[in-house]
Image (cartoon, rainbow, N blue to C red; front, side, top):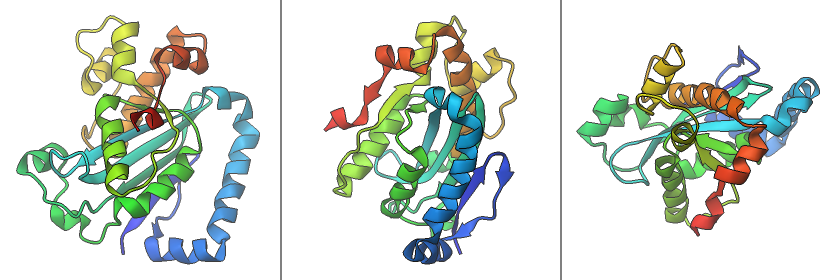
Length: 231
């Protein structure tokens, strides 16, 4: 059975099979369970929530923005990654050889994976109204927007910013791609184009870039955008 992998406060939880998530959801237990975990996190990190954010990365099966095949996210609170989210996604579309060579995901890998329509509500529960950052957000946010549009799902209000553009406006580096900035900050980086690894790298870079600003909110006043503005 396919599963969505959730890590919370650095402790890897058992992967929840999708049928189990559905059963728990219908009984209401999953929401109680997650609420209890988040409450314990909140007790220890409430002072850092104003600087909390989500780092997001999508991988696609081909050149179409509606061909999501994996999603990776991490939640940063108090300058540390406290939760992570990863799942493969069945795009119900073809896989180009070029994209397979980039991320290594094949059609066989996603046969039993959920659709993006199924995954999206869990993404929004994880994001929980926090601002979202992506490295080259023009790509990731267009992927999200176009995928929702195809599914006739209303585009939510979501504040986002781009760590690639933020880096170009904040620091002097040789190049501003993900692996180049990880090298710039002398950070280990393995598994480029794995959605979860890229989200973690984006988070680590963003944390360091934000040191050049008073706080996250002051930076967002300058560079923040709203996904809903895409229409």
